[in-house]
Figure (cartoon, protein in one colour):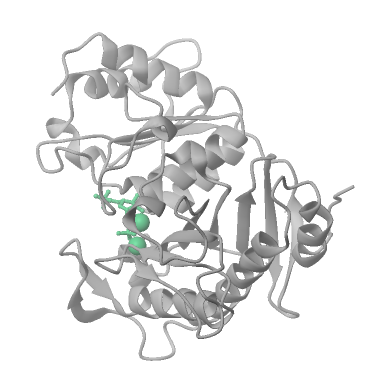
Length: 337
Ligand code: AHG
Ligand code: MN
Ligand code: MN
């Protein structure tokens, strides 16, 4: 039985047998993510002391400014996953195209592809506010023995075999699911070990926090505007309180523990929403559902959306189940944008 203070290494071994495709490959993959998390954590923690703050001078594939830590985290995760030769493909927010991974003696035998947002909330790096890493894992759909194709990455969120995030906050945590609940592990930095600190994490069914960038309010669809006004109204359990860090991982983590909802709706600036379906919304939606929460684009379940492009964006509403249902109700009363 998993128990508090069990190490992540022990937990992975213990739970390997209960995973339906158990061959040890997924365990090795999560172990590599664990190692990369420690390396990136080290860089994030001493960010003010070394020349790693600020812009890298480049833009990424979405035309956004890359921070030096975006580039660093991207390199470390890719390095860790390729050196150990345990995945057949990687897609990242920081790379235009997916990468097919193969070692000279492996002949494309690996089964898993990984999609990552190496550094989430990067606008918070320079001001010492929590950032994160998000990952999503699928089994390939193309045959073993051949190079991966875009098809292996454009799978519905329902097909994920594992997903998680690392939060580099007041403490560093790795939170993940393999489809059997959500567990959170806290890093003891003195000895470099993650311990199970948050077993079986669950969203309260209802909460009193709403997280949205209200600076964009006038651009939101009417249904979202109405929901925000509803949150602010004086009623039995309202007004709710507003908390927005601007780092999806941190906002999600807080809401999962305390009860709340995160919204990044479509707007005239971002007609498709801002967040990326494959390496931001799907992994968070999988975690949310595993933690008894919900994730929607305002109308549809996120995990049911058929992806069409690697960097596709989608409106995102995620959190306590009853609160997500409230937003859907408000949206259904209004016309689509
Ligand atoms: P990233 O740093 O990976 O580009 O992601 C930033 C995302 C998300 O983490 C956050 O919630 C949102 O963008 C913040 O956007 P605004 O600054 O527009 O509110
Ligand atoms: Mn992000
Ligand atoms: Mn990012």
